Image 1 (tube, rainbow, N blue to C red):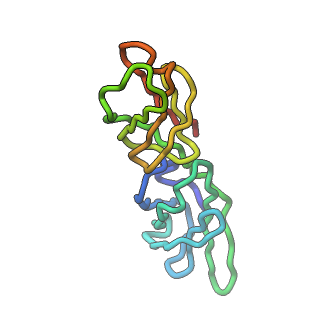
Image 2 (cartoon, rainbow, N blue to C red):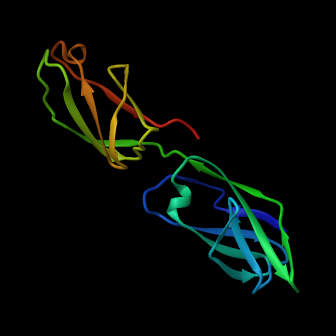
Length: 167
């Protein structure tokens, strides 16, 4: 019987594996294994009420809900527990720096490179002075946006906001 998971959710993170603690009842030392979306995962028996499963970061690279179950084989009979859900969330992006610091007024297609973290290809969106733009996400920590002449039509500050949708 699978009762709970710890953690129950995780934000997408680059290169970080997760140890998933699975709590329940009747886990057997040599015959219980955790399944993640139908795939067997390396499982360590801790006690009859706890298993630890190694969840590779590749299982956590897309937002959504994973289905977790436990398979137990006793005396040649295999049974599967009811499923528990594990939520994979998009990270909250954060910006740290941008380059260049100075832009030219009235020049089209100036590129601004932003460093930070939580940037995802095909997921992260951006606005420039409130106008929706499509950033070029280069990595989890770098993206760039292209500015048009209306973004830099006068002296002042260009505001770039970066977001990821839920979950």
